[in-house]
Length: 158
Image (cartoon, rainbow, N blue to C red; front, side):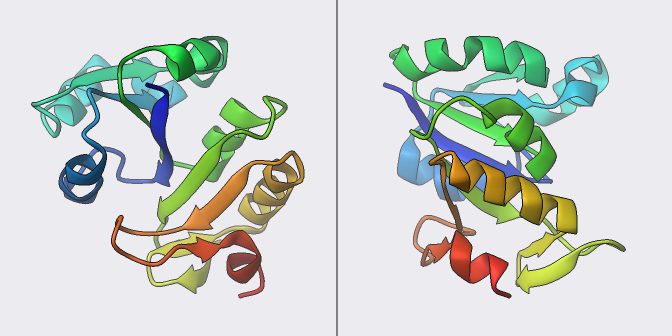
């Protein structure tokens, strides 16, 4: 089974992901793609506590790019999580367009503009999302599986 969800969520592994999406998608593994956390054993231990029923893998963006095709063909149901649009961009840029990215939780910040209750984007985020969409990546906003998908063109017009 391929990766069942690619999600940008600054909180990474938390209740909305593990309970909300996990109940719907039944992942066997969460893959956290983050350069800083890939080097921090104490943060890894903390995040792994949030998903006791699944394997949790931590990897850098570069390592994840090398493993992406493998994860897509393994029998393990995986959820790929990044905490920034930039990290998802680094993972998927130039990889082709068969990806479906969920924007699920980027909250207020000094350089972020609100576009949905749960989604605040920087100018750079918008640029990166446009590039990925131009490469055929499907991108939408959705906090939980039962919430309506908000297409990228609607998000970017906000």
